[in-house]
Image 1 (tube, rainbow, N blue to C red):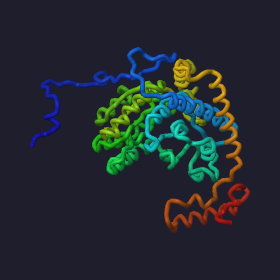
Image 2: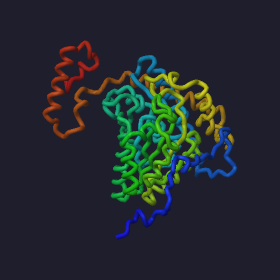
Image 3: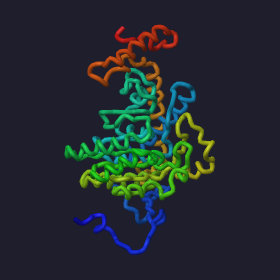
Image 4: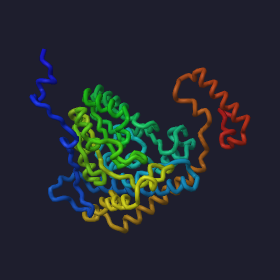
Length: 396
């Protein structure tokens, strides 16, 4: 019985060693920083309505991130993560998907959720963990989820969504659905074992999944050159049998085009795809981080000049689809809407205590019954420490 590994391979008779220089993947770039196209560039299929929706989502996310980071500094919320500088990656790729394709996010993809219609009120209810939060206040801020918008609830442990994406895509293939899964993660998460298991399974089973790596230069404070020795993350996709492409993650037209083509491969051919988007996190890793401890301002300034929002704005204005007056009006509209939603959400009560224990089991098991009783007893013993909760014990 012949060995397929040998018959399909190129045979040599002297040792040949390959290294990172043997495989260098190019970066797709369509849009110059001044908003003009490269002469030989092939732009994506992009109508005016979709282009303006993408840009308006950019403006909303900038306003949301600015207001929420300020709110965290004021002590109004406990935690926040911005996506400043990375907006083209998740918003541009989401714009290439069908509305019912599944999104499995890491934690910096609020733009994808906003693009699909998550409202300012829904954002605020989650961030403030009130009783209108779709997650019933069980998650820390920015751990969004929406069944209606096909956006899987974010999980804090790094990389858990990667094998889940492969499994979900396997189910789509088994059910013969014309959909795919897109799974977002950073280059730091690609150092997790889940990354390798997920890509290997996806390549073997040929499932409709797009792995989208936001290579933003840092895994919290660890720079990319200390994370891996190879040519980024993209070559790993080839090693696992995935179609692979690298794009300029600050060029929304390149991101959109790459994801449009990736979706066709995933849905029509059940060919998993890895997209590596080269971008930069302009803000801190989170509201608990100070990036000045591990990078300098001159480095940040280089990337500010490559701003994805300004680059796309320049292109829109050259199409005569946008102007400075519209820009100012929409920015103010988003600021006002976010501020109004925040003030409203702050006044909404916390979820009832029993919501901590529901929705997992049909009948509450004995160990959770004991925990529930102990918690209620503790709060009744120290009501002054739980002012908002003491009056919401059970159905009382």
